[in-house]
Length: 529
Image 1 (cartoon, rainbow, N blue to C red):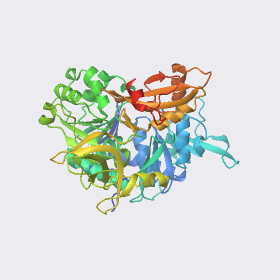
Image 2: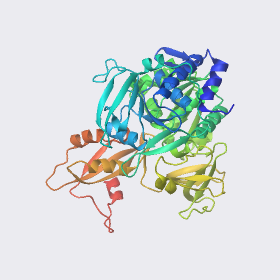
Image 3: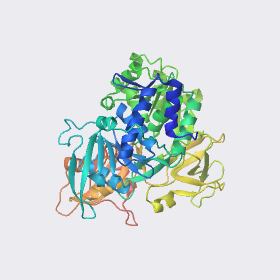
Image 4: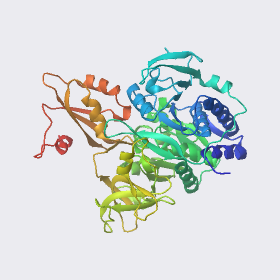
């Protein structure tokens, strides 16, 4: 049988049916129950339009229902598109429109008929404010074509009850498994196509490298729209390990997070460095029994060396591993931190390629740089994206023929240098992209949102280095004639246009933004002011 993401679950259920698959807030679902629930829900979702060639919105907070729905969508062959319930309606609408989404799953949509959806299967409709009841059909007004349209609502529980046991289609072996929408320089997010092959290859590497088994309990900390979450889910299922979603309510409380790791006997933790740093600073690791912990893995932003040293000092003996890779490559390199790494003051390496991945360091002309010189990192291999959904121009900008002639390579935009031993060191960006809170953020998307405010004449966004979050986001604004800029008003405005991780941390107002001698906005001056 050809391996697919769903056959990972079928295999786990066949071999470890009574083992815990997902444990969340006192409830445990076994692998056998997860397989049964996913199959039944897949049957219902297929009747509602989920299937090969279809994109389906997946808008969940951490829950067992989220894992069931994810595997149900995979089973139908649909491409699931993770959205965050905390995102503003405008962003969700843009993504639904750009991805041609007609079916919504998860939390109640922020607006009826958002982005052209026709059906919504929601975790809870009873008591959900103004949400319609299960089975209701609601007038969504006039669509783009001028015709009226309706949206049908169904609860997740009712959908599973109505499932047809005779349904039998199977997930296609290849194709796009999900679309992860990341920050876009034009003001619209861009959809990165993550293939089934990418997730299969990456999950196999994780299981092999970290030695995951059925005895492991893998924390699921990252949001589902963040590529870090794929390790927690698909590698755990491949190994028959237990997935332990981290409740959203704990994430702002480092002490409770550290206690969660202890109470849940977590063996494998994976998150952005800032989450670990906050726990090390305020979580009082030494007060908790962390003896079950085997692996602490971090990615998404630079781990400051002092923070890593403090982390190693406070934790029991564990492996500390730095994973590197933009969303477009998933993880492509890794570095296992050694005693030598912890003893010196140099930056933490991003390491060497994972299995079957090739990397090159090139100059502006796409030629390899001399040994020891810095340049842009190119990545090729089975985890690399096939491009951006519906955007051939952007795809052509970022994907280029691999230097070895074997397929396409992704231009990361990251400036790296190889040590004499071949280990890669990250040295920054070759463009304006900001890395903050584990996300890669295009300043242009924030600037485009700010430019919509009626009092803003011009806007520039720059990074300000931060020892915990990597960078803080500074918004520099000049007002229109006769207008006044008010920080509270601007912050509230941004919350209706941008996801939480893109919200500016620092505000600076100028009569006019400073310019270089070429009349461009002087970003360096804004960063240093």
